[in-house]
Length: 318
Length: 252
Image (tube, rainbow over the protein chains, first blue to last red):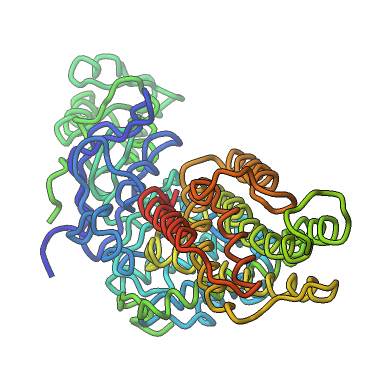
């Protein structure tokens, strides 16, 4: 098996008329790992997935999936993929059981459909026609259809959209199991907890571009500590500390100081040194690291294309 | 929770199995839309009884049923293989069904073949039913050339089905519905079903596949051979339809 990633995307551009949905994206989804494409609606996630699934040729750049061209090698590639589309895609008048059996019948060694129905809580609606299913049930059936052929690479487009909490956790467990069993997964989501829990690699997309790439830990650690809370004597002249470090400093209540900013080790040392020099009696120091949510919000809501400061490059991770 | 449940073991079932599964699903869904199938036979049935048993229209020759019934059979083939097929497939595309199938081991040619086969099966059942009605009201066909009649009908199904899938692949479902219905009505009027087709000679058989098919069935079921020009015309239409479908049919 080649060392190349399960999915290799280089400088891919997707345009719909005048609108550029994907604007020069490059990424690698390593084999056997879970890569999450994270971004708001309209960030270009689904368009990028469409290219990887071979539904459209990119208007620029190249996508390679399992070493194959998704459009040109469609027939060779499809049996190896499990694809969960975002919506619809099923005969409205067919039942859950009929649909799953149909797709199982296309595969050489399908999974046991009864097991899948049980795992996804669909046993009870086996004889229900697709159009009578709830949104969450339709999603779970779409997931079952994607998995039934024992694929080596799975594309999940917003897999838990419309699911209740229980179904969402079931789905997460399934994705973790897929990974444990050696299946590569590329999923899109706009849920931060989903990305943080499932993904080995996160690619944050914004307006059709990659805003940041890295493991969840890298993305949050690169931002460092962003808040120190120091309890000490009340009324210290903390504004003087502002001359030494670039941070927002407040005495939020008597004796409670907050130092907010991108704090590296030197800045933290400077803060503690200042308190020592001021002969203050420090009773506690708390730090707060940036969460993926902070990183995400910073990247997706500010107007500047912030990217570079946090990006850990798009070059083949390991 | 056994380890390795999802361990990859990808692969396509044998092509024959894949296509058979799809044919079965197509037939199952057709049976589930039974009312639509009956409705598709409704107009032909009305034509059969109306034009066959009354003098409402002028038809060539003395034996009205010998003219009208084969025409109605040809009309039914067009109704199911072209109009019905185009509308159904157009909506399947808008529901994303075709896209979903496109993301599976079923190939494009496999789907086109499965759809055409399922339609062929359905058409044969409908023809049998209408022929029985025809016989019941006094139609007396000859069966000496029934095999060529079946053969020319297979060509017609391939042609209509190919054109239907092409239309469904290129146009929005609403446009497909309107267009396929309009073509059906126009062909019903000028296709030589209720009254004689415009006399364009042999050229007419190449321009109006419905008229050619109807004439072929008339000849075959009255005991004469099907003219070579009609074989040629329908073979050309079939080649055109199938080529266009393989070329223009889209999953999405």
